[in-house]
Length: 230
Image: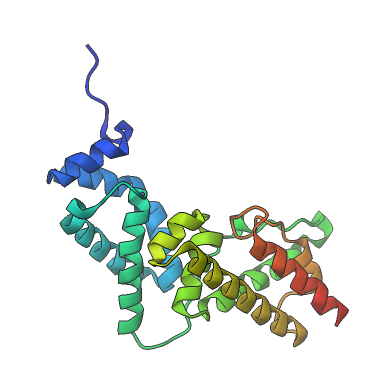
């Protein structure tokens, strides 16, 4: 006779049902499944590891208290993420305004260049990452949220809009404006020599922000071409 499935292999709906019946172990299993992904989203929103850890703790506490209100019209992760977004915004409101950072790992940015140019490429690569971090960190919270959820984390428009608490049309409007703001920010920096060269931007694969063929990657390439023409 086969034994019971390990918690990690149980269907999520089964774990949710058990958690809603106040099974703490089932809720902890759900949290374990989504913890790493959720933490990456929170870190990109608040830009600080200490704040991100605090937000995670408060998010999971609120999720446990409110698990009975979860409805399966969206994924459990999206539901968790909406709670995390609210807690992230509270964390940002509580602290003095300062420059934030946005996590863009090096594996998300693929620079194609020959070995001969590798040292220069790496320096330009780092400069591009820093320029992107600053541009995204300087966005207002609704715009940064849209960009993080859709372009950096690759959530569907439906899920990202639900997390943001707006309609899909409103979310897409925010995302469009966020992409334009980042494009303008990097374009202005490039013209003053403070950002990576056009050659560097053009050598970046469209997967550099973890979303293949993303519109943002395309728009950044357009910025590079326009800067070079100017």
